[in-house]
Length: 297
Ligand SMILES: [Zn+2]
Image 1: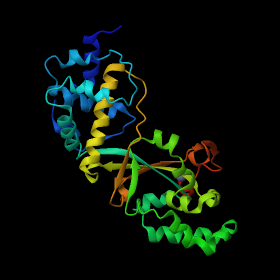
Image 2: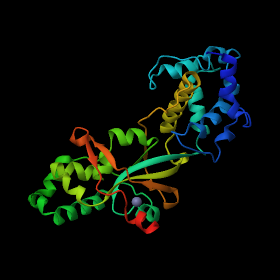
Image 3: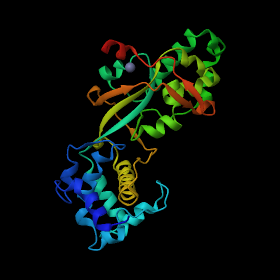
Image 4: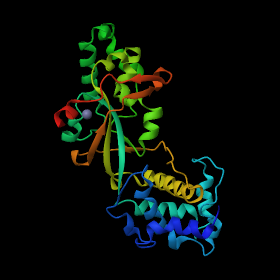
């Protein structure tokens, strides 16, 4: 039954030991989007003094709203409960998040995830990728037809978008459900150049999800504002609907610098994935261990 007092108490109890309204709650704080208990209490504490005096009554914690998880109305609802406008609070939160660290994810296909623990993750280097692509075409006889026309195939793709970029995502749910081709085939650019020849990429390596603890100071202020918007919307949905599941946001950070080995904190090998390049057909990975897994045992 809806009881605003007990629901308010439940919402703010986990934050009672934290300083209220203080950006310090984010300093050196590590959190993970899918684990709400790693950031909802901090955000509750941070928001507390920003509520109108009747803001909590307007919010009605525990009062179910029939809205999709990604509806912008969640943010508007919170905005109606706070002093100042929601854009101001979103930008202030984005600044406050700068010294915090978020668990992020990167999909790839590799024989040895240990390489990422030793070398980190590198920006898309087109020369290095072209060398790797050339080696793949040379090694695989079923790609022999491409050998004389590889330069043309590269020119046809003509994508420079990823050069100098490195992507990690805030939530692995959307990556695994809708963009698993990064894990099934590896490099999106090499996959695109190979076209149907991409199946040669399935002969080696293991679909891999790399976990990276990303200091948000290396992200752009605009990206942090967008992420702060997601946090505030999800906080409001949680406060009202009390869901037992997290919002599966599709959120990427485009980095312009390499990720050092120290930020790489884990990896896993999903056994089954849906292939978006094959109409979501189920892909069963032939292996779920890489050289690094084997060296651990
Ligand atoms: Zn492994």
